[in-house]
Image 1 (cartoon, helix red, strand yellow):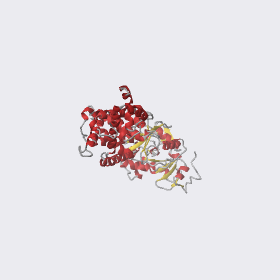
Image 2 (cartoon, chains in turn green, brown):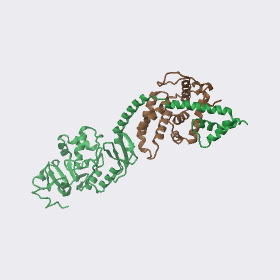
Image 3 (tube, rainbow over the protein chains, first blue to last red):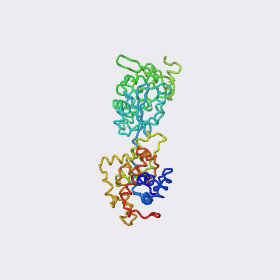
Image 4 (cartoon, rainbow over the protein chains, first blue to last red):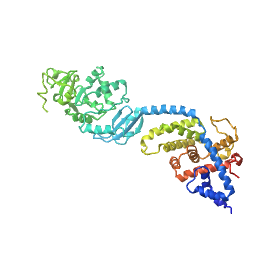
Length: 322
Length: 166
């Protein structure tokens, strides 16, 4: 007895699957039983087998092999370019408010104080930077943890490779690199920093470069102050953060009405490039302008920076009272 | 990731007819993949994921260009607009192959993508389903429909006689 049309239609998916090597368990047996009694479907099975052979031929045919190599080469170049421009970034919460941390293949590229925790789009620096931003915190989490330890006073060094690509110019980069060498617990003036980089008349330009520091905390621009000892400015309008970071390092900050300034009399002092540190009243030091000085919060900090106590004022025997 | 490039390029060549478009789409696939790679769970199937991106880009490009082919009935005997491989119409078998390719090229997107992934790239059905955001059964149905259309677009004479046929 020959199968009905409806059973032919019903067997079709199994038949095609069997002919093309895609049969699910049981399908082949069903198809075998059906075609044994149905000549038209037996022919269809063979036709589908023919089609499958043609398709196999298409599969084995090369498709622009040479071209693929060129495309692949071009792609690898573009991916390398993308990798070079790519930074991964995430917004973290910190005692100083939300901070964005971004890094590139070379190192930490951006630390930005954000006014809100809205996410990466709150970052003005990233919008301006012309970088490819990928949201990811895995590569910056360890760095973030160190920032937290730093802000808790449990760490004095953030030894990470830095990527200065967001510096606005070579001059800015030079200022940032010089600032990065300032030791923990020390302060210098903008004017002193300008002299350090061989640009003694560029005090204001140095201040501007630090105002746009893309790496605050890590590049400790908070350790750079005005020539009168006033804190002057920090990250736009965040002077309170500057005071906080300095206080963390033990730098005495006093408030005088609208102003905040370091307390020069309460700090150890190094003139120019001396290798010794003094009490501020040593010899003629009290008459030197502040811009020539490096000031240290504590003896420990001065000695950690490789300085020896002065042999005439003997800060080791007569320390400043706390 | 870039290890899959040749395969994705080949896949897109099969979907797009034109090598320039396949080049653009395969590049875009990998640039997108690069940008999104970090969001991918560690146990994700990168290959199926790349096929999914390539398929989506291809579908978007179709939509954008509105260059969807007319029905496959015009396909018979029509050659591929290819810069490609093989001289035109040499053997009967090649004729059948050209006809089959023309039908494949005229299939609706999902059927074409499913068919090419299954029959050219031999992806398992669960990966095809992931790429097309559909069920495994639906993926099988797409491939079945593709075969049916190929079958109906070919004259019996175009199918080489197979041993055992009546």
